[in-house]
Amino acid sequence: MLRGDITAAIRNAVMNELAEVGYGRLSIEAVARRAGVGKTAVYRRWSNKLEMVLEIVSGVAERSVPMPDTGSFATDLQLTMFIVSKALQHRIASQIIPDLMAEAARNPKIAETLHRALRTHQTAVGETIVGQAVARGELPEGTDPGIAVDLMIGPLYWHLAVTRTPIDEDYLEKMANAVTAALKAAPAGPPAP
Amino acid sequence: MLRGDITAAIRNAVMNELAEVGYGRLSIEAVARRAGVGKTAVYRRWSNKLEMVLEIVSGVAERSVPMPDTGSFATDLQLTMFIVSKALQHRIASQIIPDLMAEAARNPKIAETLHRALRTHQTAVGETIVGQAVARGELPEGTDPGIAVDLMIGPLYWHLAVTRTPIDEDYLEKMANAVTAALKAAPAGPPAP
DNA sequence: TGACGTCGAAACGCAACCGTTGCGTCGTCG
DNA sequence: CGACGACGCAACGGTTGCGTTTCGACGTCA
Image (cartoon, rainbow over all chains, first blue to last red; front, side, top):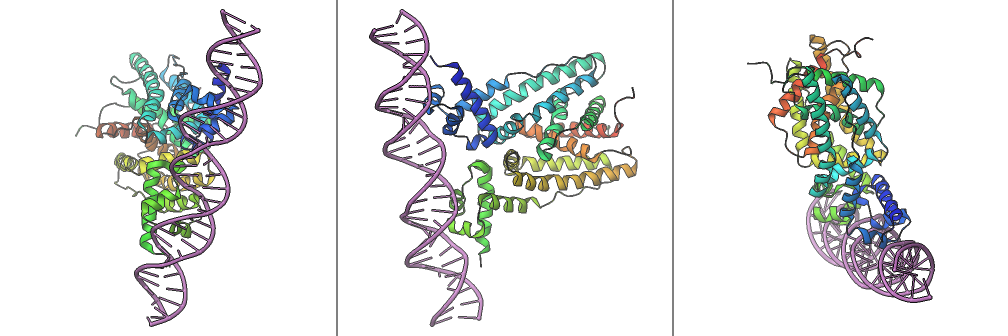
């Protein structure tokens, strides 16, 4: 039987190696070395670098972000953005996510895995928050949850990716207010012609 | 003297190779092969993979995005977002930008180059558009151009990176309206306690 | 106690790439 | 026309990683 602690050591090594050198440069030799394990142990569990990374990453990604329900849209949104900004600033995540995104542009299997890991859950959270807010009358009927998710996460991600500096409270607050205002405005097209 | 057409062939090969395999896997041998050139020719121009890529990429990045001035903030913004979305969907750019972003998380020199290439010009455009709008009274005094830029670009980038599908006109319109609304709302903090 | 299966370590042949060097060719300038 | 320099090509020794195989050492269960 495969020893569980060894599997755990490998998983851990993969995540760290992925963060340090990226998928492109990740080698099974380095993973084994880092885990203090023989290559044999790795190949006994997975047959590929791709298969290994996908299995491990999607395993980690399944830990969901909590679903906020504070009773007020503004607070739900602020809370979610706070959690997301923390997650995006996590030492490992902040390296792995952009890396896998880049790799996803070349490798359909990575794209699919990443898409599942990120989009599926995001969509659920977005639809819930927006749905509740619409039911409460805080947001107009027909508000697009997809737009909402992109508005919530996109600026945070872009800012972090480009500036590489921590997001301060003030920024987060301004951004949350802006997004709230954006969604409270009419969801329809431009002013009628 | 170094022959210009060969330099151009190498530059071109680097961009394409970068798009196909990424910085991590880019090899000088492959670049030379692709350019139909000896390795010698490459090493005569640059001494490093890093040096080579930085020089070439920052050269390309200097082609600026035009500065819109249509007389209306909503139109300026819509136009800018249209241009940015087109740029982000460009075959080469859509591969290289995420890749270099991921690499920037590991390599300070790449981070600096990318930061200069992206942020500097964005900031200028943002400040101009917002400044004009404030002067016209379309946006409140004290609107933060940094927030504006992140709101304009972030959602587009995130959406494209995660879904990998083209951005349609409807999405762009909705998003532009949302961002306009976001910025027209009070720039100050949350409702006074 | 004995059989079984995983373990780490080491080595295998193979391939790719590193950065450098030497060679003979070709184009250009003076 | 002659010299110079950039060119391509090929080969250098060295490194790294692949995926596989063999080995002896443990640990576990019966």
